[in-house]
Length: 267
Image (cartoon, rainbow, N blue to C red):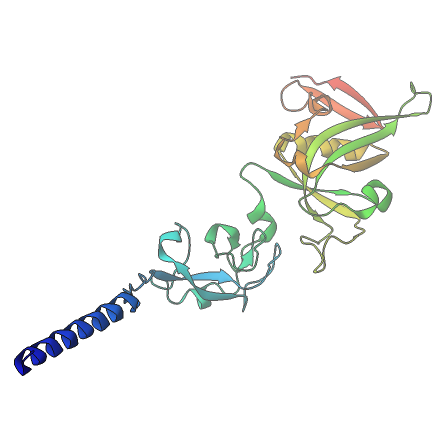
């Protein structure tokens, strides 16, 4: 074998060795991972005026409100935003809560009473009347009746026909309590016992007349506390006969010693 062939053979061996080594490296090398970074879309927000702590009925708005970022697509009609009312924090100072608020809840005009507006008149629904009636601890569910509770009004009066000498009847049902004495809200730490002497009830004009007559003829009016689930039921009147002669029959109604009598008037 001449030298030329030896050189060619050496080159061939070297080339084969290099090709094998390169193939081994390529087979054992881990694949490169390409990571694509996608930026998350920035959600559009709006500044909404919210309550920073719980408010009870009648609480005065002062420093309990603040601007808070709110998802723009979750802003409902009636929310107060900084874009539309930048001076709202100052504008609503001095107003009062018509209904309870909870921390983080957006402030809404329909749940507020303007500064200087009469509270009791403002919380009365259209066509309703606020009528006060005397109560005592033993005629008000032991003092556990609070504003916004629902009650029945029970009248006890003297009766010659009754064996016990008294008759009782429920004259009004499912009536909303507006206030106990001058108390129109609960205590700070929850529903505590509060003994009142006067309850203010939300009544229709007819019911107002009935309880006015009942106060004159009754030995006692008792408030019976109803369950919270009854709140959606309409208030009922079971004693229209107390005012049946008023405003058209031409009769004069006389109440004496708890006994009703009527006398026809001359026209």
